[in-house]
Image 1 (cartoon, helix red, strand yellow):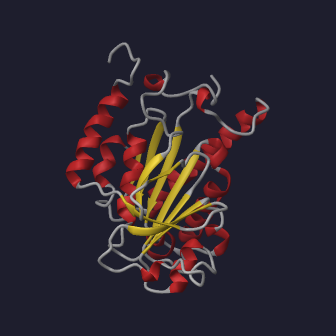
Image 2 (spheres, one colour):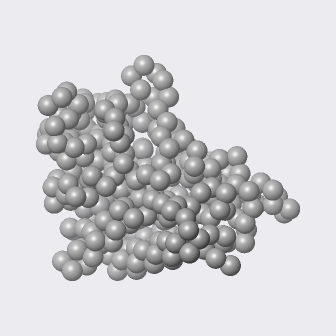
Image 3 (tube, one colour):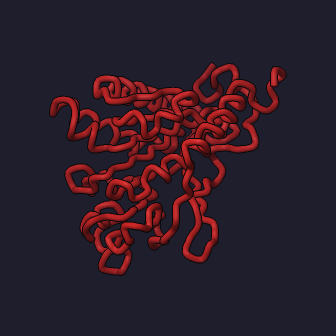
Amino acid sequence: MTILNRRRTRRNRPAGPRSIYDPISFGIDENGDPVEVTLMYRNLLDGGEPGSGKSSLLNTIIGHAALCTDARLWLFDGKIVELGLWRPVADVFVGNSIGLALDRLRELQSEMDIRYTQLDAAGRRKIVQTDGLDVILCVIDELAYYSVTIGTKDEQEEFRTLVRDLVARGRAAGIIVVAATQRPSADIIPTSLRDLFGYRVAFRCTTDSSSDIILSVGWAKEGFSAKDIRPEDRGVGWLLAEGGIPRRFKAAYLTDAHIRAVVNVARRLRDNPPGDPAA
């Protein structure tokens, strides 16, 4: 069975009411209108100072994916507890181990290469929803922890290289990378990496330059600076999509109780997807 036709047996059936191909509700804008983003075939960079709202957005994205029977969750969380509540529905969960993080990223890179080999053999450029192939959502909470804090310099460099490769090549193979950092600096997010992310979100930053490191140089001078977000406005940020201008929005917020409730529903969906005779 080729990669384009395979899923784990329990998912080899039509997707449920939600799909990773559907728009994800991020929150509301300044006019109270919904802000929705389709992440399929895109990656997202999420940055800002501690407590600014990064985790709120990550949890919202993971919550959507958890309820999609055509998505798998690969979660990397150096603090363990930030994304830990999602562990029951995560296919892969990596905590504060650089060795395990590298092993899993190598596995993901190998999966990506296999998918491209199969696409090439089929004369195709990307996977589509009707292939019945699970999309992999790879969420990395705190790039700096794995890339500059723990491990040896060689391990940190390999981590950066693997992430860059997945962001650069993974989209058409159904691998979406969502990465967050509370240290938006050039050593953590070099321009060559930032520019690979189709979507970028800047929550409150301490300087205009930190905001520009996330969004792109020049936006602060145009009046789109996350430095201007008040400290008390947690969850407020600037969303930049490819080819557009930053849009100010308020990210949705999930409490621990909300997350546990979503996890309970997601576990039932994943164990018995709609259409499953056992459901």
